[in-house]
Image (cartoon, rainbow, N blue to C red; front, side, top):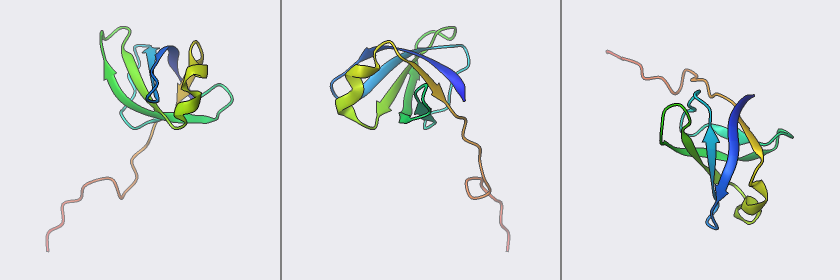
Length: 90
């Protein structure tokens, strides 16, 4: 697991804003807490390149306020054969 960043702000609609590192994640990557429990997914990356802001859609919107100040982590998704486009010619 790779360090994503620290949760700075939260919203009542289940969105957490994380101040990230220079290693920008892909949209759709799963997000975990320090106990390896799945928190949500990366929805948007914006802001400066050196410290981007990352919005995370939290799976449990009721627990979003407990995330403020916590460190979050991601796992990189790898493409398997079904996700790749193939050039088929009959």
